[in-house]
Image 1 (tube, rainbow, N blue to C red):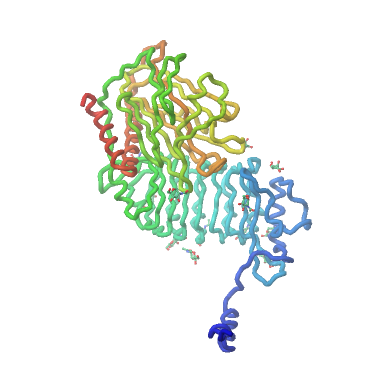
Image 2: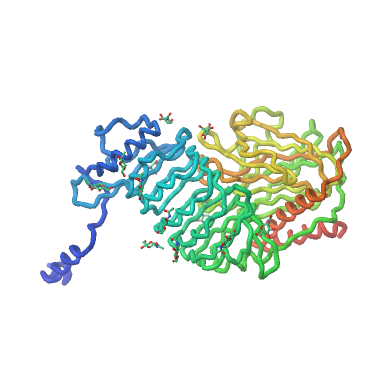
Length: 539
Ligand SMILES: *[C@@H]1O[C@H](CO)[C@@H](O)[C@H](O)[C@H]1NC(C)=O
Ligand SMILES: *[C@@H]1O[C@H](CO)[C@@H](O)[C@H](O)[C@H]1NC(C)=O
Ligand SMILES: *[C@@H]1O[C@H](CO)[C@@H](O)[C@H](O)[C@H]1NC(C)=O
Ligand SMILES: *[C@@H]1O[C@H](CO)[C@@H](O)[C@H](O)[C@H]1NC(C)=O
Ligand SMILES: *[C@@H]1O[C@H](CO)[C@@H](O)[C@H](O)[C@H]1NC(C)=O
Ligand SMILES: *[C@@H]1O[C@H](CO)[C@@H](O)[C@H](O)[C@H]1NC(C)=O
Ligand SMILES: *[C@@H]1O[C@H](CO)[C@@H](O)[C@H](O)[C@H]1NC(C)=O
Ligand SMILES: *[C@@H]1O[C@H](CO)[C@@H](O)[C@H](O)[C@H]1NC(C)=O
Ligand SMILES: *[C@@H]1O[C@H](CO)[C@@H](O)[C@H](O)[C@H]1NC(C)=O
Ligand SMILES: *[C@@H]1O[C@H](CO)[C@@H](O)[C@H](O)[C@H]1NC(C)=O
Ligand SMILES: *[C@@H]1O[C@H](CO)[C@@H](O)[C@H](O)[C@H]1NC(C)=O
Ligand SMILES: *[C@@H]1O[C@H](CO)[C@@H](O)[C@H](O)[C@H]1NC(C)=O
């Protein structure tokens, strides 16, 4: 027989000590609901009132069930209504407080009822992918225990409220894809517990300062995609030792110490010295370009995300564009004089930049063209280089080949030469179905040697249907050729407008160089090739 272990029976003194320690603890440890527990009646009444206002028919009048026992009202890939509770007294008790509330994917939810702010023990509130509109109700400030607050993809407008800085426990704030206006209040730097901050698509004039000088030493994900931010990038890196994801698109961030321009990137770096990673940035000037031989018989075309494809009917060769650009990168086709660039790392998935399907594509006699596509969770740029001034017909080919249920919404914006041609473009809606072709054709007056096609995510739409990272622009093919008839002579460009275009082009190219810094030296090599293509076309 084994001798008793010395720790098997604690002495009565030790037991006494343990008991007194437990009694000394300010509160009993919180526990999940158990058999016989019921929800705090004030929480139960508030939740019932909220669900009633949201017209959730799953909710019969109380006391038919207890909320903390029921817990889940709906759970599918596109919609969820659920709560979590924790209880403070020994079971059974009527003490269980609602700590988590998640109601997402209800496109008919347009407001936050006042009763919601009676749920004062909420630690986590997820109202993403609904259709909330109006301002953020300041009474939400009553939920002082909030640690997680997600409200992305709604129609909330007004300035980003400063009172959010009062949620001192806040760890995870995701309020992108709404209609909020900047700037990001500088008081946000008080939120020192933040690990995730995702604010995007800030309207209201744009060009906000990126002066986050606060000590966000716990911050691991800083996602500022789709904002017009400007300022010195060094400040972004300051005191953010745990930063592993930094996302920018649309921004004009510069480095005062390095005298270089930075723009629109996503950095997915695990390393320590982020400023090293972004040091290889430059600004390109695109004055000299060798004109391409482009006429009505030989249009320029690219099969986005796919192999070379010849269309006899269109008498067009769609060039190969099957290079994997990973989370950020670019590809230069020197012989056909075009460039594709993308920045778009998603913080929570390894999304693929190239997608394909073997399904039947309807509405076209060129289905193969649509079976592959390039996509990005940030932004895609296509540059056609060497154009002479004139009017061109630009055709963009689309088919939604990834999302196959109408609960998923892919929304993105399209700009050509810096001019917005589509806002919240939804391929599925425009085409009237999935795996269905839809084209955009327009005439563009080109006065620079470079035609820039820019497709980008503005923060809207679903993120994760059918899989994480399913959002952002998707394009199947592009075709450009001189417009057959010039109705009127090309107007002499207005000077300031031309400058605007130039800046846009330079901005996009700078994004290429930051991508180069992150991918590999072979991409850096391509970048130099690109420089020589533009600057020394005959070299
Ligand atoms: C919410 O709380 C207020 C007081 O703060 C109270 O008057 C009201 O009845 C509560 N509403 C519900 C539905 O619990
Ligand atoms: C909102 O949609 C949900 C799910 O489709 C439905 O159960 C609910 O009744 C709708 N609410 C209103 C107010 O129509
Ligand atoms: C909803 O369903 C998913 C997958 O079936 C599951 O992982 C998740 O825990 C469920 N959520 C709740 C609140 O039960
Ligand atoms: C329910 O929570 C409220 C705080 O909102 C508290 O005042 C009340 O005593 C609680 N009721 C029960 C039965 O625990
Ligand atoms: C929120 O708190 C303020 C004061 O702290 C109070 O006047 C207001 O009624 C509260 N709102 C709700 C919905 O409980
Ligand atoms: C969302 O709400 C807006 C009004 O704020 C409305 O125009 C729109 O139709 C709603 N969307 C859906 C999908 O119900
Ligand atoms: C935030 O907290 C400060 C200090 O506690 C207070 O003065 C201020 O009124 C609060 N702001 C809001 C909007 O609640
Ligand atoms: C951060 O969270 C801890 C609890 O985890 C809390 O004690 C502290 O007050 C919070 N920080 C701030 C700045 O409020
Ligand atoms: C932010 O923190 C500073 C110093 O810690 C404090 O003086 C200031 O009142 C805080 N601001 C808010 C809005 O809490
Ligand atoms: C944005 O504002 C800064 C000054 O705050 C200015 O230097 C910069 O030129 C502006 N950028 C754009 C694109 O307007
Ligand atoms: C940040 O810039 C804004 C202007 O955009 C200015 O009002 C604010 O004082 C600046 N904050 C810091 C900490 O420099
Ligand atoms: C992405 O891929 C890398 C390497 O393959 C892996 O370590 C990482 O966990 C993946 N991240 C996600 C969010 O799937």
